[in-house]
Length: 249
Image (cartoon, rainbow, N blue to C red; front, top):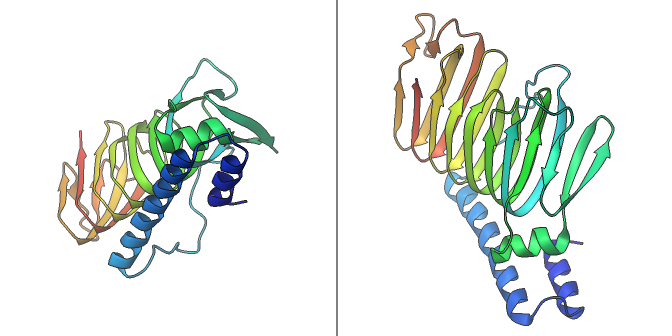
């Protein structure tokens, strides 16, 4: 059952009013229209390279599909398993966990603006995978963030790994990258990233339509990439329409 059918079922069951149903349907339509507009302006949706993205060996995952709402995730070295606060169900899928926001509280209240954020604490050795349609995501200190946000903003603080696509929205914050390959793809929006002390990065950055500013990274004499430290990690950033700013602290 898709989101529109769920709204209709809740309306028929008397759990929401006609006014709330109309508001929910309108919010869904606006989110889908924004994503479609971004893809239309670009001319094509970002396509993956066909190769699986890099991730640290042995990493376990918390996976979340967020139709609408806000997620705050942070590293907590004092715990051994992820801890979630907020209206959602946690399911075990093999060695990983899946978060399913409660239908009434998560989906409806998220669109109606009545729901507080889901708060997720992750121990070391866990990554977060997000599939968001209209989402605000904040990540602090976690080992890896990957996935896709169709419409919304992403805030990062000292995140150690990244493989993320944002169709329409902004991403800002800081990264601490020391190994592996990391990717950020923004279709329509702005990206502003700081590379923290201790990072060792080789940067490949491109902007199709907009401005690009790179500060504090040396030009690699063997190619067009920029480099910070020994360049053990690789960061690939693409912005199709918008502005890109990357600087080393």
